[in-house]
Image (cartoon, rainbow, N blue to C red):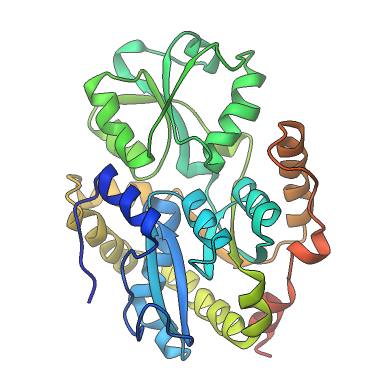
Amino acid sequence: MIHHAPMTRRFWLAAAGSGILTVGLGARGAHALDAVRQGYQTNLWGMPTYYLLRSGLLEKHGIKFEEFAVPSGNLTMQQMVARQVDMGTYAGPSFVLGHSRGGLVAIAVIENVGRTTRVMARRELNLTRIEQLKGLKVANQTGSSIGNIFVDTIAPSAGLKKGDYQEVRMDVNNMVAAIAAKTVDAMVNVEPYNTIAETDGLATTIMDYSSIDRMPVVMAATPAFVEKNPDIIVAHLKAWHEVAQAFKQNPDKVAASIFAFYTSKGYDMSAETFKKALTTIDVDPAFPSDLKGYLQKQADILLNEKKISAVPDWSKALRPEFMERARTGA
């Protein structure tokens, strides 16, 4: 049984630190060897995984699981580096960091989320350009992929150096409240929080990330899990293909399932507002041929910023054969 607690900063930080978040349906205990420890983030990027866990598709493919929910993917990555979680999804920069720190392996791209990510400012400020953030307070989840892209790419391209704006560190799920309270002037955030802020008249969009980065979200696994459980990985990816079909063929059912998650956490938004947010995510499990080139660019940025010591060995970091087996039915 899943126990839902209020989604407060204290709850998430305590839970992430302990590594004992929610236990998924079908799992037989925290250390069950035959249960995949699945991490996901509670912003919209993680909701395809949430739907996967609720859909019964993993059970259909003979997979038991435990679920570990955190506010953002970089925390899932950290859990995987600590070997608290077996599989999880996050954007390219977090994957490169995870491979550098813990040898994590990419087995697929699950979705593209560039349209889900925006830089937004308080409505009354009437900001339309990134350079106008100079001297202002910008909420940013430091260490996340979207946070790294803003600090390392977007702000510098607009002529803003570190120190030209005040970075206010906070989780993405706390940013709308901070905008409403006027404790920050702008935020780097993801759906559904952006659409909530927009619908409530709190913030307007300066830019979304799709103009500079399609932001593929990588499904990664720990190296030991990959070597010991290749058939589970293939079955997992087969279930993902069925999830993608559901997103395309039965979007209302998918939206209702995921919307129930947010209402259970106390979020006050209409079903229509949520459906609008959900349309910004593109679920398409694959192992695209240009993934290596994309990750190479992310690695070069992280290396230049001294956040990694070397570019990954892509022959070890990227394992496309599992998706090929899932696609062909092997």
